Length: 337
Image (tube, rainbow, N blue to C red; front, side, top):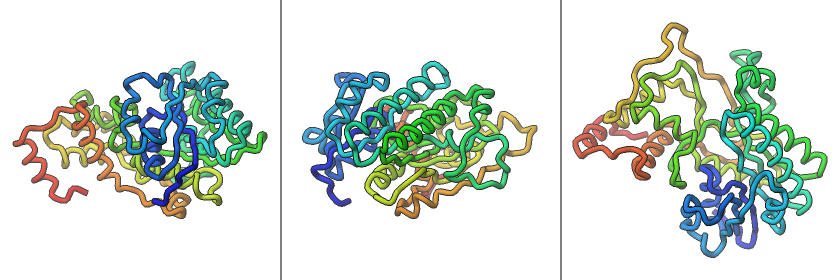
């Protein structure tokens, strides 16, 4: 990758799953990075200090989404900002207000600091939550989630992210900020941070025995490194504009457990669907062409699932199989991907 030495960027919520990978790749490219975290001294942020180039070019800044002054101090003097920080919860009080106010604060600070560009981490949750969308309609960047539907189904995460993204667009237009938005689907892959995040927990439950069945539903997946690379592509490509769906594939949960069981037969992976009375849910169609056009090559979802589990083992979140179990697994998956 070409070096970007001398460029200074801010990454909000730097200790998160996507943000940690983003910090890693930015440092590898030669950027100087200011990462905002709630408490720079918290041991949970130590993994950031251990990244290559961190000693020389990473500063962890104490900041809070609801504290404008702290964000302003972190952003001032930067060339650009990656706003990845956001609550991940279905509690409306903890989700909606911090997501929206945090976005307002970041865009306002960016305008004041006259930044080159803001890359905003949104979500597929702002795109596809629409009960009126025709089954054959391809989900693309023109689609928006239905706020009333999100409210009625109490999906406060999607509601909060949608309001936050709409706020980002309105405020950036009003304040003359160059904004580009990425809309990732469920993100998997190796963890850099010590804790298990919400998206990886989605896979972990199938390996620990806590999930006895799988849902009759579909989910789109993408590799965390691809998401981090997409952020950098959007920042570095002057012609990039608008929204970008970041997804590799949509799978039924039944396909997910089948892939996991082939790779890791030693774990109690469920083989029964929780709802066999209804027809099997069909994957929705989507396009990721905008990111492909910028040169992003997506990691296959099978590799993504495999690397997620290996990482969970290495981080101590999953028991490592015995030698006999390992032999069984290798025989069952001779061609890993």
